[in-house]
View 1 (spheres, rainbow, N blue to C red):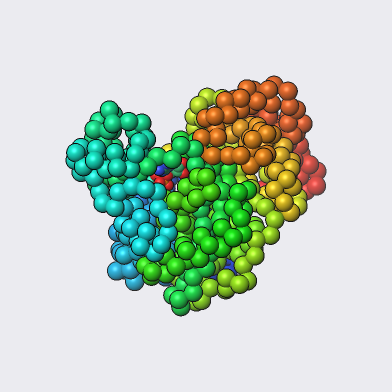
View 2: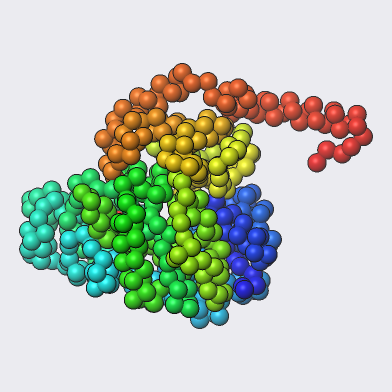
Length: 495
Ligand code: ADP
């Protein structure tokens, strides 16, 4: 087993990885930026080192500094989490050269999967259905026009090295194609360093369904079923669930076996996700994410497999602790991403001080959080505060439980998207499982529902007097005065 793990990430995922380390009795090292000095993951770690200023390029993306810290502090492995360096093949190569184990696939496989055109070709060769489109990068307008008319409009132009939904352009007909090609190439060059783009058929309102896979260095490869991630805003997932309300056991087995065969064919070792669009009963491969994903807990809740621990086992050279035959999905799990953002102001980020914090509990609840009461959500990074995950014996119980958990969740001091999640959990289409990637745009009534909720509902925060930041601060001062007087009388020291 690995001896000491450095976590090259921040926020909730850093805490998540450290939790696995603690259970495995492996010491963990945090590296943090000056903006995260007071963060939960810094306090949670066994050791923590500041590696630079808030700017990610000088801290969380600083390959040299991170590897140097790992070597100096005796960490034999680095867990990259998601985002930042998680799918950076240069980082994977540099860690290997330094003699440190990266908890992720090799730099070769990472580079292959990071090139979406190459990944499409690998999948197609292994018999996995892909979205109709190009098998090479598109460089000039003539080639683009020819390809698009062959595929049929509408088409979508995408950066080959892309991620986060950045730069994708939908082109309804021939007219806008040449300009859209130029624009996407420019965004690709500026954001991802290369202007490689490719063209796919644009599916009108598909579902996003993905398969979780695990593969070790002993030739074992398994899948843990699927996750449905169709509730998205600007191509960013907001609510995920497992299993998908539409996937049958026969489809699950068929697609699961296909993806396992495909990842075996490229010598993949680690956890990963094979993403698909799903339309009219058919799956179309989209991309592979060679890392742990934000939404991995829903799979953990229904399968009982700790994916991060499996990642650590694989990186330690151990075989997977479970076989395909042992994997069974029980019940339903739903995850809501709790973000510091205002759903009534176009989901603008709302960083700031959490003046009060009370997280839900009880049967079937899991909260993966990177914050605590009094913590200030910094403005420099992703505004995710936590992930609220629930399990129920069926989808109805999971939704009922999510409604109850959202009622219990109190975050004071900043606006969050909790009211948005409450509105979705009451939405009749969501309840029926009739979702697609345009669900939020189509359900225009959600904003009014949120306003109604905010106007009518007496929240637990109100009852605990944690709603307004000012009230919370006054209450906190009053409480500390009472505590210090109490302690004086008791002759104890207040800490
Ligand atoms: P990224 O890696 O940038 O996140 P993806 O290829 O994973 O990009 O796509 C993200 C989202 O964009 C998908 O979940 C889907 O909502 C939408 N999308 C991507 N490709 C298509 C397509 N061909 N047709 C329709 N929607 C698409």
